Image 1 (cartoon, rainbow, N blue to C red):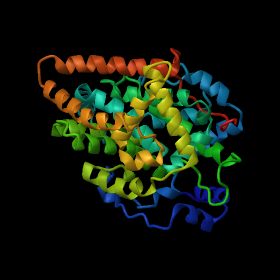
Image 2: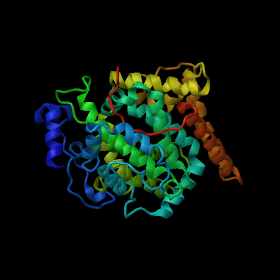
Image 3: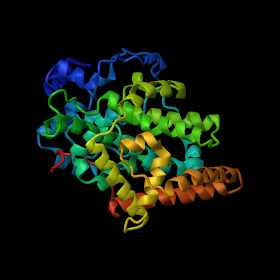
Image 4: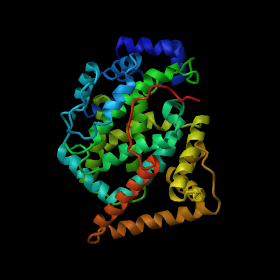
Length: 401
């Protein structure tokens, strides 16, 4: 971590003692030898942010250029597109560097990840949306950062932008020239940098011991609610996964972590390394917050209204979410118990998984499921966006309320 970042952290947090009290004093014990880099300084990621993106975006905000930058970036949608003319030079220089895939990216594995999506699409929709969504509500740092940032005021719009990242990642050409994932990742990285600059200025963000949000550690915690959590659940559900599929799925998320600004020395090189890191950074921080409970309630309501406009399917969504994340996380997110539906979902869901797994090997079934899953994803994005183009944009303010 550079000196400027540390000084900024201490100023915002109200001193080193306050910050340490808020974060806990446990030492960072995960070795960078287990990362894709294979080595590193071993710095505690709680004290590392994004030194490449943060000063550039802070300057854009301070110079009042966010509106114009967002307008220009709306036209940048494909990986192979040149950056729009008229961008500030410091931002252009950063984005040209940020859009490059890491040298260790394996295009064959990235292409093979499409096979994983073809046969696991419905599972991914459930696990990314309800599973990862409820987990994020039980992560205090993430719940507060979402709630008090601009996106917290319009959760449906924020969910659409998060859904776009997941949708673009699941496209067969995600990281190919005609794909969109590089663009989505770089824009998301800019959003994160803006939140780091803006949120400590919010009157609702803790000043005594409050940390600058979205540290490298926070990003790792969120990362583990996605690929690591998904692989754990699929294994628990006894879903058939080939070794090549498993490796490809991990690889596309490793590349995505890099593109989102996570340093290579923190990105796990294997599933074993990911599980070990997750146990250190994710499992211990799960807890209830008022903000997380409110977000969970809104996410579940939005999900129910996506099925039936009147939200009458909310009890079913509650039961499905509780079954996916388990009683511990469900309790932290205050997901209501449904005493009639909970046992039915608990019995019926494993039967559905087993039936689906038995059908997948049959001719044409993978193609059919891919078509159905793609239609579901497109419907979800259409519902969340209200049919409008989804633009990931740099925020210029915190939650207005």
